[in-house]
Image (spheres, rainbow, N blue to C red):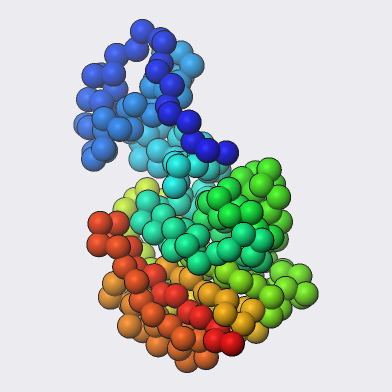
Amino acid sequence: MSLSPLPRCPLPLDPDSVVAALRAAGCVFAEDEARILLSTARDTAELAVLVERRASGLPLEHVVGWAEFCGLRVAVDPNVFVPRRRTEFLARQALAHTPPGAVVVDLCCGTGAVAAVLADRRPARLHAADLDPAAARCARRNLDPLGGLVHEGDLYAPLPADLKGRVDTLIANGPYVPTGDVPLLPPEAREHERLIALDGGRDGLDVLRRVADEAPEWLAPGGHLFVETSERQAAAARAAVRAAGLHARVVADDDLYATIVIGTRTA
């Protein structure tokens, strides 16, 4: 499942005109997006459709049907939450703490991008879950070839009960945008991703608290919980993880504007 270099498009297409159209539509990374669209289109007619869809505001990943994430090409279906580049930090941190053969659970999995990274690089017994049926279907496309099991349902509810007390790595990249801030999100997110994947409640931490509250019941001794949050929410998120009985610390990557809380169940 490793992402191969984008192929050089053999068709006589005009990259400059594609870049110009994307730039006129407000695409900040027009050159990079043009390269992806040119490599995807099979002919000029399809290219015109792809450029038009992107210029209309549809996320690039929904236009081409995939996203690059930690070197993997991850399938992204319409309306499913697009994996963010900052979440690669969450994936790398989880990967660094996950030994081969570990039991891994990815809640609020979306496309299953984070779980795919772990399955690809750390052979693991992998389970993922999402409340959104469309996300669960998309995650199965990405994780079935890697031996992962995807469950549809709310957080821990659909997981096999025999995982309790045996999970080595628990990942939850749930929604953490405060309800009042959702209207401030870019149109790409507001209009093309489901609200349940964005809205984290009044302070953005409703789902995180629910994940943390039950985490000690599912984690193995020494197991780790990994949750993504924002810099301004970090202190409250860490407090929520501590209140659940886990040792908690905040780690961040300034280059990716990424902040996560790692909770550990002590032996």
